[in-house]
Length: 359
Ligand SMILES: *Cc1c(COP(=O)(O)O)cnc(C)c1O
Image (cartoon, rainbow, N blue to C red; front, side, top):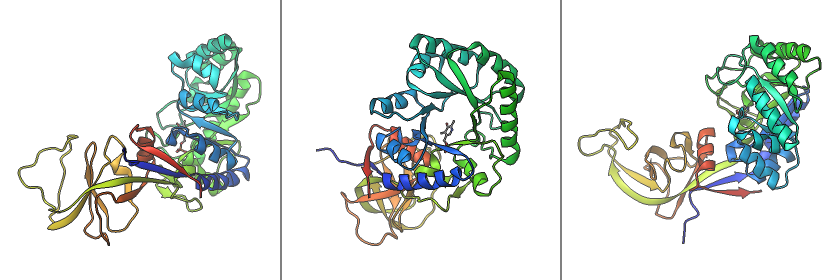
């Protein structure tokens, strides 16, 4: 018999309600919302929940996730979020409706792959507004326009940007106005209007909320907000969204009173970190069978009061349970709320099973 733990439960009804709220907020400002599925490895139930909530399409960073959704029968538009690898252009040409691109050479490679596949792919040109991940510089518009004009099988839908993800740069009226302006320049060079100005992700929602989103931005790609109700870049919970759709649960394998200070001379832990300890005397400690192979322990918060994470190795997570009320025994389970990193790790770990609950 194998244990069903660690398990990540996903409340899809809650995800639908969150998507409805985000879509409702944005549609009032003429902004369409794409549901970003990569946080839960494009689980089909999650993709459906996002579409049920009114997302116009689905977006993921992996072509294979998009292809999986196609095989599951999804017909709605699908966007590839990661700029494509030269080695996957055929896969992109065959499976995605639109794709983010930042290199003129990628446009030409994708054009050729589309020609061979007999398909057409829409392109959103990424502009780097200062977060220093992907994107052309504002002075690279012409070079990109030249490549787009040479391409017959790709169609430029517009411009987009990514903020927050690498350097933590926040979306602002200034940087998103620049995006709109660059969209205008590109449109002039191409000689046709652009359909899309894609103004970022969850972190851009705050500009929609306070009414400062620059005119012209008409698309957002939202994952974290819909799945978790949080905005890690903006360092806030999103007050009108629900935050308990995702829970990670592990099984207790040891309960014992132990001193809070290790015995003997200490070096580094299994991952090379030097742990620090505080002497709190003898404490009740619990081990659950879950570790760095399953989650990102730093992103977990125990749901029940009186539990505190002490540390984790590859397969064991220890907690201080001195202040937890009630008995704890092997076979009991402990549930955790997860941040984006912990959710992503659990979703991509082969050792964690995902359980869909629909309340
Ligand atoms: C992951 C990702 C998103 C979604 O970000 P959230 O913060 O989860 O809303 C949007 N755009 C790109 C390019 C991404 O990689």
